[in-house]
Image 1 (tube, rainbow, N blue to C red):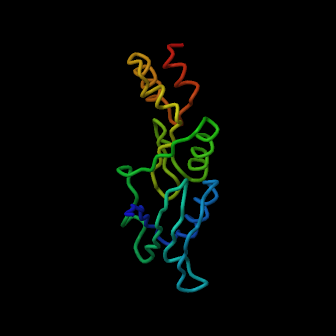
Image 2: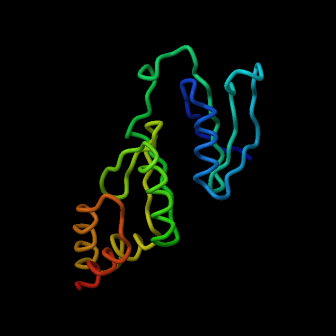
Image 3: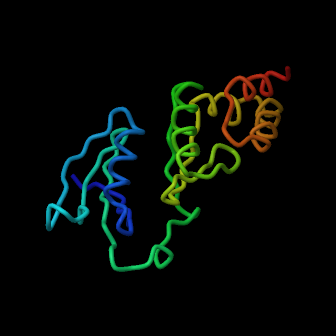
Length: 157
């Protein structure tokens, strides 16, 4: 079966990335690492985060600004509840990342993430148009998404 695996380019920080992501995602797995010498960073790695495989490439020799990540591509984490939203958002932002709005943030490597509660489907994308509009307006004022505030806005409370 054909599959798609994102390839993420890290400039001599691949080992830091492997460690960071496997510590941040509770179910993370490292499937493979290729090292050309024991005292050198990994050249490539395949990791799995929340069931999605990622190919990591050490782009050593280039400057980090030569091939930076962009907000044009992000990875969305669909979280079960506020505790999970807090875990990922805080894990990215509090460890050298940057917050943005509407659940978007950037990790310390410059990779963009959307940390979104499943309740987004029943609030911002809910069937009641007026409730959905209120929840959307509330979301536009948020950095980290707050489930209770989205639900209150949707309900008109």
